[in-house]
Image (tube, rainbow, N blue to C red; front, top):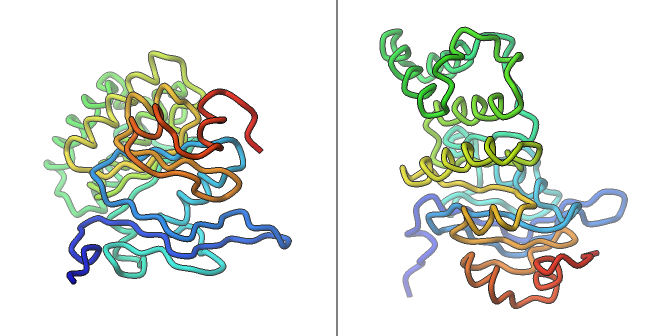
Length: 244
């Protein structure tokens, strides 16, 4: 029988991963395979382990036991170099908007003329054309998050991890960022994103990972999980009930 996992490309796997603190398991995921086109959205209550799982997938946190695999190989520096992550609170350089993008593009090895042209494209994609010379630290919350996403995309990642990128934003700013996410996904960037917003999950997700108490309680196509959840935890969360 053929090893189907070995034939997958950009396949993320979690095998028997645990993270424990003070005798308690903050994360306990026995088996999770993300092999579809995405976007994949991680959904669940506060403390469910969503952000912790995201950091494990990106290699920022090493599990106490178990392994994270990329294309059937242990996650390593080469894999991480083809990934990017944007945090809930964007981290920007104390430089202009365009200089934040130029910093990444220069590290990609682009010549000056190519960098300038690419910066114009990126600013247009994020609706920041008139902000090129403005200090990145003076942007509004929504603008700063857009710049953080553009800077991540400037590195041409195969996978982009997003940790609640719209949690503190108004509906208009949220809509702009959701469009950016969908455009990136349509270009083949694998999106793995944490959200608490069920409406956002309906708008963006191809598949959903539902989490509770550090465990994956359900994973499947978005429509199936959102409309006909199989687990009691998923049904309770989606109905707005208290999930402990």
